[in-house]
Image (cartoon, rainbow, N blue to C red; front, side, top):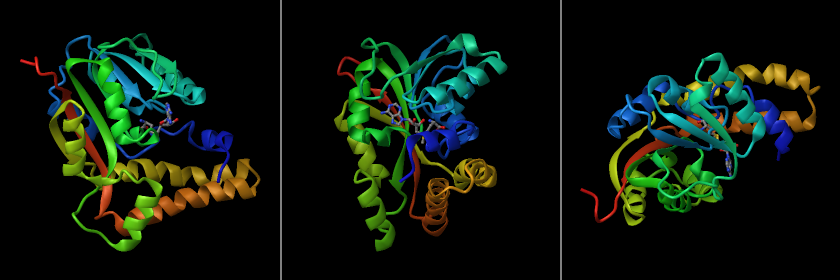
Length: 253
Ligand code: SAM
């Protein structure tokens, strides 16, 4: 197990800290019919180094609250926002995603890529709902099975690592029973995983050198490599699903 400071050091300059891509996020914006020409309020929860906050600031007129509990990641995000001239529309907040200091119905959109698993999908989407305006949109990516059945090895692995792993129809049911109307779903294409893995692979040699090939640094690299190998072997059976939904209240028009 790697220490948190080492993990932060390894990831803090990453462009993105999980699978994703700008075309996929744009597709989610379109499926959610999120207006790009209005000064909406968007929360990016588990924002990491800010891939999504920066894209949303560039491609919409929204004001973004970027939340993460690792201040070093937020610092990277602030630096990048300044460089891109969007720092006035991105406010960073160091807080835990399960204890947010927000007002009820504060946001038009809640966005969270590759992060809700930290509190569990159902717990996360049900807790965050109160912060969305009625009719507000939720965009969330989540580890998902891509087929109704899969090899035992990968099934056992993910059920131990993340017991909430499930198929898209099951995730859509969870959204419905927690007061959301599903608007869309798509699995992230494989290129989105390479967007995450390729730069990470490139960082391995420098990272190991900076840490004198310590046992801890080697263990971190091996763990990341194992994740990549697992994806390479079983990518037709699991991936990230992107779920787009709307807060549903019985008074919605
Ligand atoms: N959304 C970003 C992206 O796609 O690049 C980051 C994804 S990364 C896989 C997950 C992020 O969730 C990390 O930045 C991590 O620090 C953050 N995180 C984990 N647990 C958290 C918690 N309890 N509260 C807030 N952020 C958390």
